Length: 403
Image 1: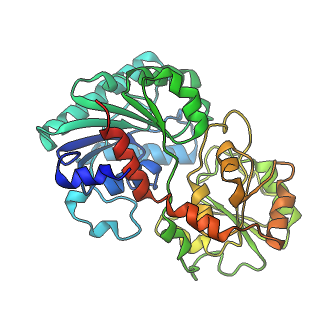
Image 2 (image 1 turned 90 degrees about the vertical axis):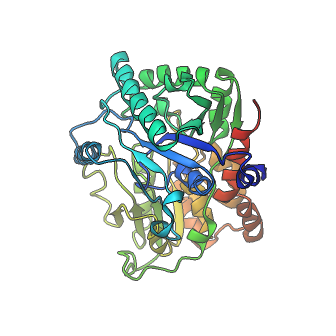
């Protein structure tokens, strides 16, 4: 559906539109919403609202550090900010960057009064920004988080979109009942829900007036053309490197990962990304498992280029049934063998990777190095239609059509 940008370029579609987007912190890591709006920004004004996380804060180093970052941001003025653009976002014109808001918020949605207070604070910040930065423009609300149902009933917005990227009711560390209550209100009030996975669409479509599916895209060139970074800690690894990247939390099957690493002591198993809500010293008995921590998106492919295979060892249960890991297509774009546990979205792409239950996972990882499963021509054809630019056109087309 190419009409989205065509209409934008003539000014008949989104040229006079301002998008108010509630999502993860702009520029902190490249979420699907950020990838989409990186392509929308040249055509429309965007006000991006950074919000606090959905998890109830704990006395952990990660949560304390994040709390300090968020608190300090409250005292900085709103500004236009470049996003996760590997092609040089910092050099992009200011008109192609969002206005980023970091409103003060109460760090919980557990109680009704907490949710109500946060919605009042967020509504006030948004109305001020619209009045100051986008007077007279048609306002469209897009939220990846089910935390602002009152704004979905605000008449200032011509259209309200719930971009459902995950099942937050099943996340570890989140009050599932509170999220379910807020999400049900959001689903009832939104004009359109756009789901990133088939299971999310199936579960939530009956609860809302209109719904569609838009799976994640991928920046193929970013991951397929990278050369190994000689400064990477993986540059001197002896033997094969088996790697994964992204948030390492309780959705990752630690037992399957441990068993695979212990089965292949000659290999290096690498995790690139933050470790969240895992027990300290959990893998102290696995000497060939290395945690590299977070790296900038622009530098990530240089580390991944050292991988000999990519792995996706998620637990397979109700907490992961609805997810569509953003990294899955990024793994495929590298052209390296991919081994994944059978999440529904991984099964959908099963012709391009190796699927293995947690019990079979270690042997499948070892086997993929000996006889990698590839369909290079078919994979290239598939990925050609999965670019973020193509996805953003579909996204805009869904928003612009209809009443």
